[in-house]
Image (cartoon, rainbow, N blue to C red; front, side, top):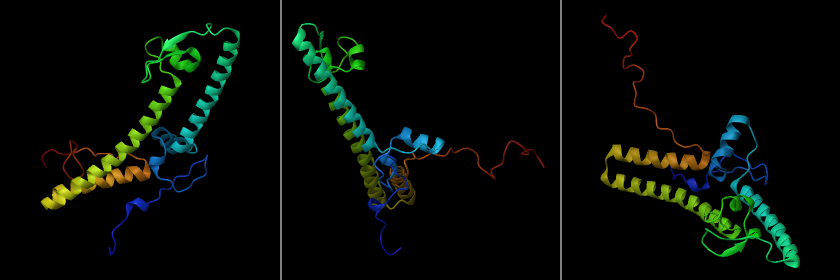
Length: 194
């Protein structure tokens, strides 16, 4: 091979059915979406489209809550029940600041819509960072193995790096094969004396 392979330019074979982007890698889709696509042929929807739809839904819900609270303020501001947010803000907020699911969790466990949205964003960035950290660590282990010049360590490190890069492209997690008895090693059938 005359030039090294540049994996950052690899393209997958997946298309988003919503935004119509093509040749996306498997890591642009959720694990559940990839499973449904492989099993039932259901069109894929990339994580960007999913998060955009979730954001639009949260904005619509916020607009409805604002409209409801403005109606309540005109009638009687003390009608709406209040609760302290269990999220990062810790504020005492009216029911309109919580979504239905969070409000039903009860006092001391409910998080306001702003805290939920912040947590969703933090989780998404943490997942992306975690994937990139795994690949960077695998590259570091390949470098260390090459310095040791032990072919077994080099093969193991390069295999792990290749598996992580393949997971990024295909969306499939690596499968570790069992170390059970394989072909040609004798089996229980016909293994008696001859």
